[in-house]
Amino acid sequence: MNTEPKKPLWHRILDNPWILLVLGVLIPLLSYTLWGWIELLSVPPAQLP
Image (cartoon, rainbow, N blue to C red; front, side, top):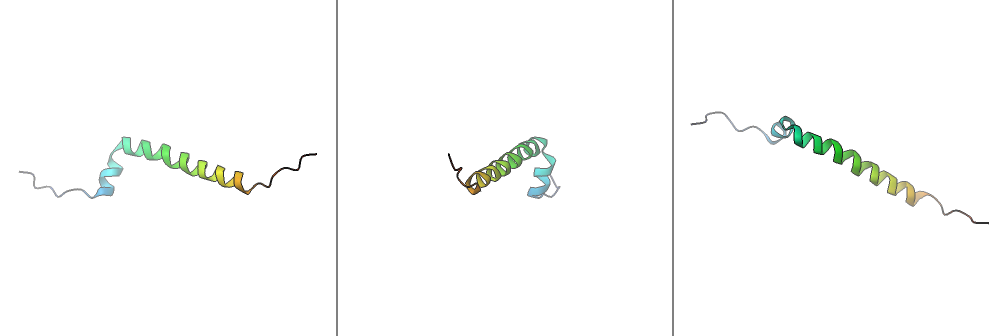
């Protein structure tokens, strides 16, 4: 019989290196992609000669 209390969700997430790897790749990817789209939408159209 297991008498240990169940670990909280954040503790289980931070103990799993694969989840940390995925989060470490996805969070910068999504944030820089969003930042890039915002920059592209905020640039005024170029005036062609």
